[in-house]
Amino acid sequence: MIQVLIIGAGPAGLGAAAVLAQAGAQVTVVERQSQAGGVPRLCGHSPFGMREFHRLMTGQTYTHRLIAEAVAAGARILPDHAVTAIESGPTVRVATPQGEITLTPDRILLATGAREASRAERLLPGERPLGIVTTGALQDLWFARKVLPFRRPVILGSELVAMSAILTCRQAGARPLAVIESSDRPVLPAPLCWLPKVLGIPMLCTTRIEDIVAKDGRLCQLVLRNAAGHVTQIDCDGLVLTGSFRPESGLARLCGLEIDPATGGPVVDQSGRTSRPEIFAAGNLLRGIETAGRCWAEGRAVAQALLADLPPAVLEISVRAGQGVRYVMPQRLTPDARVALPALQIRLDRRARGTLTLTDAAGRRLASFQTASAPERRLTISLADLRLQDAVGPLTLAMEQD
Ligand SMILES: Cc1cc2nc3c(=O)[nH]c(=O)nc-3n(C[C@H](O)[C@H](O)[C@H](O)COP(=O)(O)OP(=O)(O)OC[C@H]3O[C@@H](n4cnc5c(N)ncnc54)[C@H](O)[C@@H]3O)c2cc1C
Image (cartoon, rainbow, N blue to C red; front, side):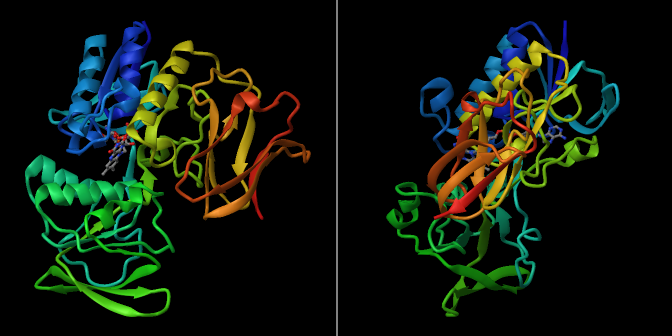
């Protein structure tokens, strides 16, 4: 019986655990937090579960359902178990409340998720007072500990997760004063981006934080500058840093996996296999943020590919992001791989209208289509539509603007 270790008990890891255990694998899921569930565990709001269970659920109800399915299938879930190293073998070192243990599975599935950029990574100017948190930290404080770090925060960013920050603030009794977005319009498309307006929260586009002012160690004012150079102050006691997700790839780097600088996650083929053949990866670790439902489906599909246990492919074509493209994933295509990731997943590096073209090293055009897209919109090219047999690698995906 194949032994599989899944690292990370979010939607991707739990979805994979259910499939693998149902198929008869011996499955252990390790989770460094005190409870399984990943990000949704701390989301007191919906929408979760539409793709998976055809129901609208809160993150917490959804988490209970994912855990119940994995356990019912026979998976063992170990909270408070943090993987600190994956050595050759593979031998996996795990920190537990009882001390370090080592595990020696046949296969590993990495599902360690993504996190929002920290204050330091965003290069914010000014002082470093209390009251500045990411959405994830806010949800941890409020839903897990009933601690609210502010009453009148400002929300930085206008991705989907900013709406989650607004809903969490309102549930907790805080009143957001404004949403700040550096680009000229909300990242989130209509009608979702209307939420702040509906709730009477001003959306300040083309606006940046120029200074963070503190009093007695607490945030008391933000100084803002817009594109026209106009400077304003907002008296507030908190700042929520939303979005700008980065794959949680520290462990992947540590165990020597090839990392794609464009996604920040491990390089994978279309079966989710990384550069170490015994290690697979799925979920937000692969490229930053998608919905929970997509990560769950991806975890399950990669689990199926892992079960097929094909030998590592000999023939590979790499795909890379060219002009105007922020990333493309999977980064390696192998004609004989089991297809868990059936499409190239693409993000542009800026809002653009034009032609997206995939060419091979001989200059042959494999795919080409017109698109108008924003950086956070998901674009895909179905792998089934590509004729890869005669292609000469590497392939390059580039956006030519109209
Ligand atoms: C604030 C917020 C609100 C959101 N709201 C929605 C929503 O309303 N609807 C929706 O569909 N999606 C929503 N999302 C997106 C959704 O939650 C994620 O896409 C989904 O949780 C990703 O699943 P995952 O399994 O890839 O990663 P995660 O859920 O991040 O799980 C990864 C797990 O791996 C664990 N881990 C990491 N490293 C280690 C290690 N070394 N050892 C052991 N364990 C480790 C982490 O502790 C974590 O529990 C939201 C995301 C955020 C941040």
